[in-house]
Image (cartoon, rainbow, N blue to C red; front, top):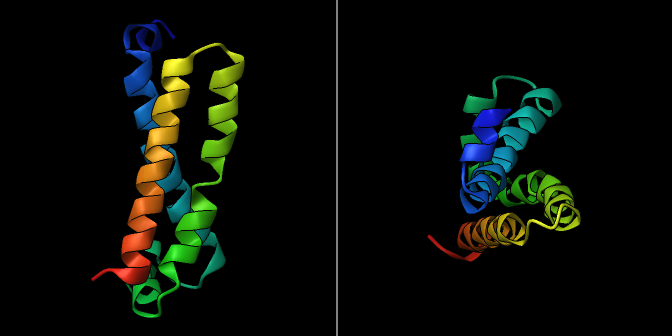
Length: 98
């Protein structure tokens, strides 16, 4: 637990905000769709459904945002919010971009 105190709050917020949705996405796809998650994600991208799954996977960031606010750690909450905005931008790129 002492290791987490040495990490800056901003970095911890970014790691939480980027890593948690990625892990949640893999778990959701693995247990919701037949087959392997690594093989299924490109199929979801081909059918334009990956954005829906990504939106659901980012929802745990809301919990961590409010948790950091309650802990009075504004820098970590701001970093989680920035990571959530990054996921939203990535979702927009998937929907309207290349």
